[in-house]
Length: 204
Image (cartoon, rainbow, N blue to C red):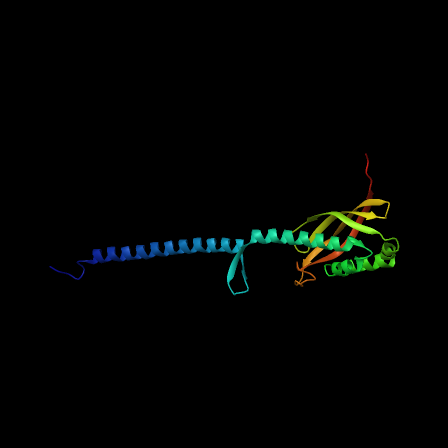
């Protein structure tokens, strides 16, 4: 005899199968979503994007950015120390003007102090030639402003006599707008200070 409950077990099995399928599908979808989010996060952490002149989006690795930052900070410090200390009677005005674009008021204050002390007048009066031989900088790039210490070796030619000196300077670097051709690296020296200056003697 047929009853309305004859296939109830079949219906329950079908319902259980559907429920299990939905649960498994939802679990798989959630797992895949989590994996994709993690992957996307890792990629976004390791990549940055810039837009070039024709509007194309270009990915750049953050590692490469740090490498570029190191190169630019080193180049900025080398350029500044060359302009500020590699001077003679014929080029000091031009070089110092370029150097002042690369630093803030701390650099300008040091320049004014040297000028008041007659440093540049002696340069002209005695036809001195101050030549930078080497520049070595150590920079902490972990946090901005970037603290640096630079060792510059330079010589002063007084005609028949040439003396060599070691100068240690310190300061910080911050980002500013790039200014072509005055400040191409978009960095500015702050808190600049001449720590030590000593004469190097050649001992044979």
